[in-house]
Length: 431
Image (cartoon, rainbow, N blue to C red; front, side, top):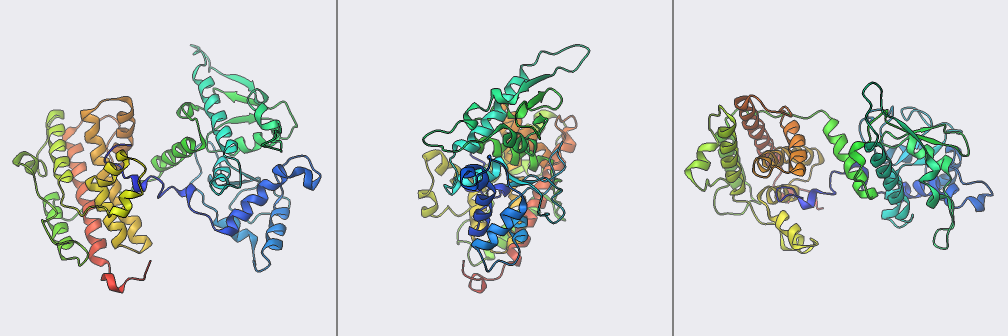
C-alpha cells in the first residue's frame, strides 16, 4: 500500500465485506447447512432450495415477516460483471435475482459468502481460501496456453483434478463438498470460470481460453480474490467527474476559509502553505509537454503533502498493526479523510466526500508513477488516470493537466460544500 492510500479505508467501502446482522448470518448458515450437515438431513451434500432456507429462517426467528427481505439485504455489487447476467454478492440464485425467489429455486454461497461466514467463524477459512486458490491455479494454467497463429488457444481440464481436498472428509473437516456443488458455485463467481456440464455428479470440465482469467493468476487467498473483484467492479463503474466554478487556486483558498471557520477545525496555520515558489506556481501552471506536466504535477503534490491538516487521534494510530500503516494514516490526505469522517455523520455526505478524496489519491498515484516506473505503480496509475478521466496513454499533456486541475478543484469544492452544510457539532446525533 502506498503512503497516499488510507489504511483506514482499506476495508471501508468494500461492498462485499460489510458487517452482517445476526439475521443475515443465520441465512448464510442455512444456505451452507445442507452441505456441511448433509448427514443430519440424510441427503448427499447439495445447495438447498429457497423453500428450505426461508422456512428454517422463519422457524429460528418467529418474529420475522419475510425471509426474502433478508435475502435482498445481503451485500452485493451494484452491477453484473462482464460475462455474467447477475450482480455478484454473497449468494447466488438459480433464477434471475430481480424477481422474488420461488420455493424450488436453488440458492448457494459465493466465495464472498463463504468468506463472510469465515469472518464470524462459522466456516473454516480453508473453504473460501481453497476456492480462491483454485481460481488462481486455473488462471495460471490459462496463462501458459500456447499461442496459435490461426486459432484460439484453448484447453479443457477436468475439475476433479483441482478438487480432491474439497471432496475428502478429515478429522478437522467432517463434510464433503462435491464437484457438482463446487461447479455451480464457480459458474456464478465474479471471475468468468467456464464449467460444463453443471447438472451431473462428475465429469465436469473447465474450459480455458475462451475468456481471460489472467488478472486472477496471482490470487492466493479469498482476501486477495475479493480485492481484485472490488477493484475490477470499481473500475467498471461510471466515474463521477467534478468541476468547480472557481480555479484551483481559488477553490483551495475558499476551502481553507471554510475549514478555518468550522468549530471542529483546530486553530492554527491555514490549510494551504506552499513550501516554495515552484510548488506554488504549479497550482496554476500552463503545461505543453510531458516534462512540464511531470514538473507541475510534482509541485502540485508537494502543495497537497504540505496541507496543514489535524493529526489522526492517538487511539486510531494505536490500532494500526505496524509502523508502515501508522505512517500511511499520518499522510496528509489520510489525515484530511479521517477528520472529515469524524466531522460528517450523514451517509450521503460521507459518500460524496469519499468519492472526492479518491480524486486526491488518484492525483498522487499519477505523480508516483512518474517517479517510480514499476509494473505495480503503472497498474495503479492506469486506474488513477481513469478515475481522473484521462486516457490510458496520454498524448495531449495540456489537456491532461487541465483535466487534473479541473477534477481536483471540483473534488475540493465538494469537500467545501459538505463541511459548509454540516450542522454544528452539538446538533449532530451521538454516534
